[in-house]
Amino acid sequence: MEYKRILLKLSGEALMGERQYGIDPKRLAEYANEIKEVVDRGIEVAVVIGGGNIFRGLSGAATGMDRVQGDHMGMLATVINGLALQSALEQKGVQTRLQSAIKINEVAEPFIRRRAMRHLEKGRVVIFGGGTGNPYFTTDSAAVLRAIEIEADVILKGTRVDGIYTSDPEKDKNATKFDTISFNDVLRKGLKVMDTTAFTLSQENELPIVVFDMNKKGNLMRIISGENIGTVVNL
Ligand SMILES: Nc1ncnc2c1ncn2[C@@H]1O[C@H](COP(=O)(O)OP(=O)(O)OP(=O)(O)O)[C@@H](O)[C@H]1O
Ligand SMILES: O=c1ccn([C@@H]2O[C@H](COP(=O)(O)O)[C@@H](O)[C@H]2O)c(=O)[nH]1
Image (tube, rainbow, N blue to C red; front, side):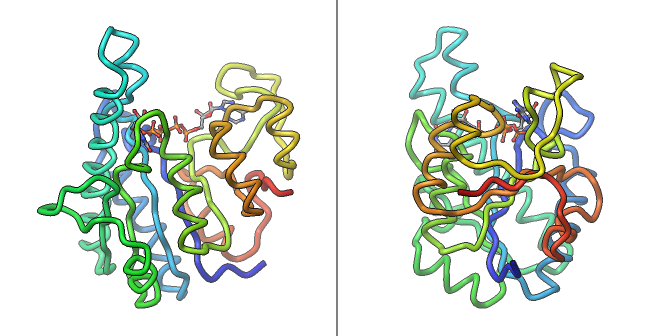
């Protein structure tokens, strides 16, 4: 299928590059290049970015912090990453808007669906920060929610693994990769590459997801050009 409007989910953790914490400017610039290539092709691009390189609510809860408080910190972390990506894209001459699900008006526009769609029509990259704006969710769920709202053709989940495997490939070296898999199979087999809420929402709205390795140069453009890389999750 030829994509006109995509929702790209970027992992916050991947932004660390070789570091243990925070943002690697080299990795950020690489991601900006990948996105620019696609924008220059006339594809409308929205981005949801994670916050795992800075803070996750669950990690906070594990050390005794109130979960909701931790989730608020996690959502703020995604805004920080959104600002960094915005800056990296603008350095390359790509027009962008950052919209946040939590009000932080001095630094980002509030999320307004119609406005986001208008930005996309004008060729601006719209970065959605703040996740869904609610605790107990993840940015994977935010990615699916925003993709449905803006009527994206597909969710491209760019991560550090090259697709969905029979089990976590970072833990099991015998794991094998799926080229395609149904939502039902992902859920039945309990595959963990995205959370269940995100997969279920995508399935109910018949929105396909492609999981692919974002750290390999040119991969985003390969998907746009119709190459079969990564794993396609469909009905
Ligand atoms: N069956 C599986 N196939 C592929 N990857 C899997 C599987 N099970 C678990 N994973 C793990 O899922 C992760 C992919 O998710 P991703 O990199 O987006 O992390 P994330 O926690 O969502 O990032 P962030 O929170 O920083 O945005 C990989 O680290 C991979 O090891
Ligand atoms: O809708 C949301 C999205 C995110 N959070 C919190 O932010 C962190 C970082 O997001 P990741 O998806 O893990 O990258 C997440 O751990 C949550 O604590 C949220 O509360 N609501």
